Amino acid sequence: MIVAITYENGNVFMHYGKTRQFKIYEIDNNEIKSSRVIDCGEYSHHTLADLLALNNVDTLICGGLGGHAVESLMAKNIRIFNNASGNVDIVINEFLKGNLSFSGASECGCHH
Image (cartoon, rainbow, N blue to C red; front, side, top):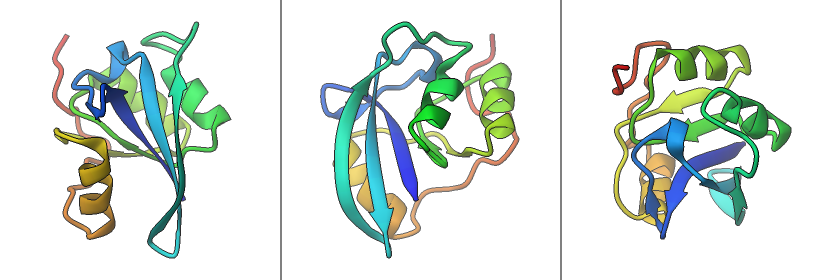
């Protein structure tokens, strides 16, 4: 499994569509095998799901995101866990313990 978390200065960046980085975790047998930070570069609000798909991400953890982002991620078969906050390394460990809620296809927090 490959998990991406919206990222800024070690913490979950609260708005998916405006994030400039993701921290990517490779998970095997519920353990972190590796992690790295990637820059979004030329990718923007409407194409971030493409960037995640290119990096084989199957799960996104973020603060909030709007309906268009949900649709884009669902089209790429990326599961969404929203309303996360705090240090990304703590958040990924909470995810591995099963303490984050799966958001599914519901609108996830930003209404614009």
